[in-house]
Amino acid sequence: MTRQSHRIKERRGSSGDCDMLTVSSTSTSSNGALNEPDNNFEAEEHEEARPRKRAKKSSSNEEYQSTGSSTKKMKRRMPENFRKVRGKLGMLERLAKDVPLDVIFEIFCYLDPSDLLRLARTSNDLRGILMSKSSESIWCTTRSNLEGFLPPLPPDLNEPQYAHLLYESHCHVCDRKGRCDTVLWSFRMRCCKRCIVKFPRFYDQKFRASLPSEFEDHEILPKECVYVSQQYRDVGNFQIAARLCAEFEALENPEDRDAWIVRKTQERQTITAHAQQCEAWHQARLNEQTNKLNDIRNQRKKQSSID
Ligand SMILES: [Zn+2]
Image 1 (cartoon, rainbow, N blue to C red):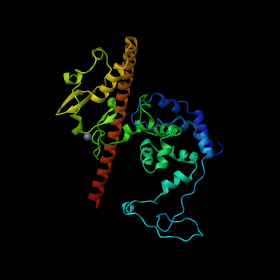
Image 2: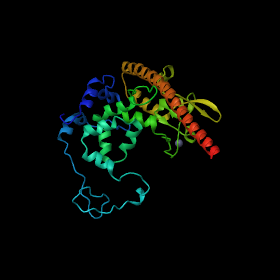
Image 3: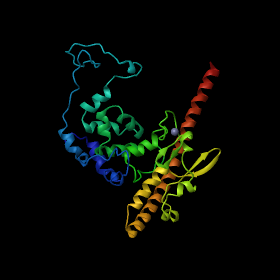
Image 4: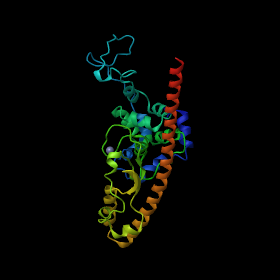
């Protein structure tokens, strides 16, 4: 604790609305990014015991240039893949290994969730830091840095999963590279125009035939309205339906089944309301990006006409 900054202590003490450590108790994620062992809650002890490692001294075959003034400077051999990358190679790795955790957390508080997602992919050390439960407060703080009203973390997602849904702008079905701005919030995924036709019509008999009769009278299954072939249609999700069916049929007691239906209906209503708020935030963000691009284009046109 002695290595923690006062600012972090104050933030942790006062952030009653960022009750991060209770979040993942309801997380049912498949990715399980934050569903790490409970020893992650002992992060402060780990911070205390965390050795201040030095980056490995570079040998003649390694890329890093020695920083010691007395050591002989070696010419950096930049790998082919990184020739066009700006900045110093390996700085993030050194950050994760050498800098105390509280300082790392302090720096990360100034970023936004999409930055954390990218950072988590840069090295195993940073991934380990950011995907641990002790980092939940960082994700929460970065969400609060965002402009506009972003709904709070929903109970069925953990922080990295929520950030992934908000910012990972590729199709989550086919993983094709390229921007995909259609978010199926109730399904917790993004989907491109090619993949969206694969979802079954919500009221189609093929989709509903295998569902328990109890599902007919209650809104348990998620539904999304999508634009396909120049018309809007309601679609369902086979995978989510199969998962819910399995949960329901695993219950043998009728009372348990009734209680499950009530609980799932309430969860569905919560997710649907949250999805509407997310869509409003998403559309506002897209509009803002469009306006910024238009402003840049107009400035370039003006500049070129002056020239
Ligand atoms: Zn796709």
